[in-house]
Length: 282
Image 1 (cartoon, rainbow, N blue to C red):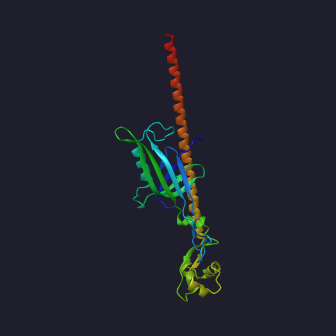
Image 2: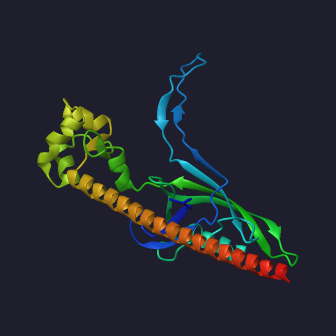
Image 3: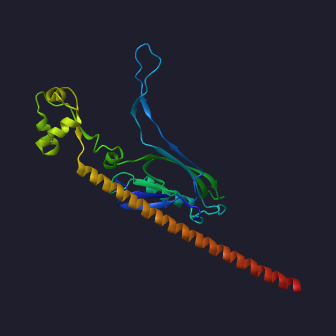
C-alpha cells in the first residue's frame, strides 16, 4: 500500500458515529505530530514536609498537535490539492473543524484517522495559520498550519472505557437527608426499592443510616446502560472501518493516477526520442 494521508471527519453527533458532516484529507502529510499524555497529582504534603505522596488526582484528556502545509506552488510531490488555491484549502479546513455548525450550535466533533488502528476522537482547540509564500500580486500559495485537538469521549463511552458499569459505579448520590432509608434511594434511582441490597453491597454498608447521613452514596451501574454504551463503541469501530476503507480506496485511486501520469511521461519521452532520432538523420 502507498503512503496514506491523514483524514479528518466531522460529525454532528457527540458519539462520533453518526451525522457525518464532511471530510478533509490533509493534502501533504504533517511535518510533526505530537501527543501529550498528562497525569495530575495532588499536592498533599503534611506540615513541615518537603515531599508529597503523589496521590492521583485525575488524568486529563489527551492532546494531539499537527503541523502541516497547505501548498499550491506545484513543487511538492504527492500534494493532493495542487491547483487548489491555498485560501480555499484553509477555508475548507476551518469550515470542518472550527466554524460553528447551525444544527448543533458548536463546532463539529471530529475523528482523525491515519495509519491502521489510529483513530482519535476529538475537538479542535486551536488553529494557527501562517502564510509563508505569495505570488507577486499577494495571493498566498503556501500556508503552515499548527492545529491542536483535545480528545473527546462521550459520557456513554467513558462508562465502558473506565469499566464503571460492573465492579465500580456509574452514578453518585449526594448525601441525603437524615433518616432517609436506603429503600427510598433505590426507588428514586432505579424505580425499584428491592435494589437496596445492591446499593448496600456496592458501598460495603453495615450501618445503613450512618452511611447515608454522612457521605455521598455510590450507586451501582445498570447492565442496560453498559449494553447501550457497548453498542456505541461498536458503531464507532464500524465508522472507523468504513473511513479506513474509503481512505484505502482513495489511496488506490491516487496510485492509479500516478501510474497513468508515469506512463504518459514515458510515452512522451519515447516520442521525443523518436523526434530527436529523426532530426539527427537530417
